[in-house]
Image (tube, rainbow, N blue to C red; front, side, top):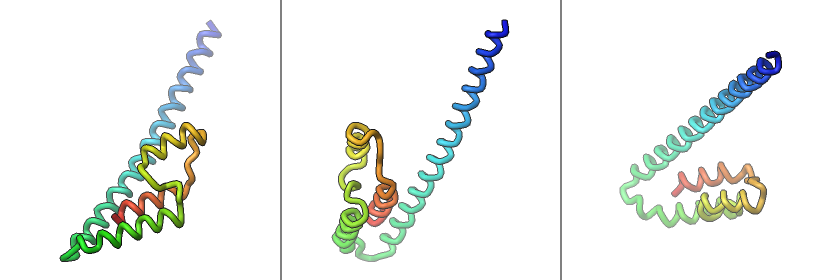
Length: 109
C-alpha cells in the first residue's frame, strides 16, 4: 500500500511539473509571436506610407541580405531548412543571433 501511494505521488508531481513547463513555454511562444506580428504590422505600416513603396523593395532586399551576411551567416535561406539542419547536424543547436537577425530581415522585407 505504501509503495502504491509513493508511485501515485511521483506521478502527480510529474504531472504538475509538465503542466508548469507547458504553461511557461506557451507564454514564451505567445509573447514572441506577438512581438513578431506587431513588428511586422509596423514594417507594413511604414511601407504603406510611401507613395511608391515598390521602389524601396530592391533596397530592402539588399539591406536584408547584408544584415544576414554580416551578423548571422547561418541565418541565410529558409527557416525550415535551417531548423532541420540544426537538428540533424548540430544536435539541435541554433546560434542565438539567428532569431533577431531573421526577425529584422523579415520586417525589412
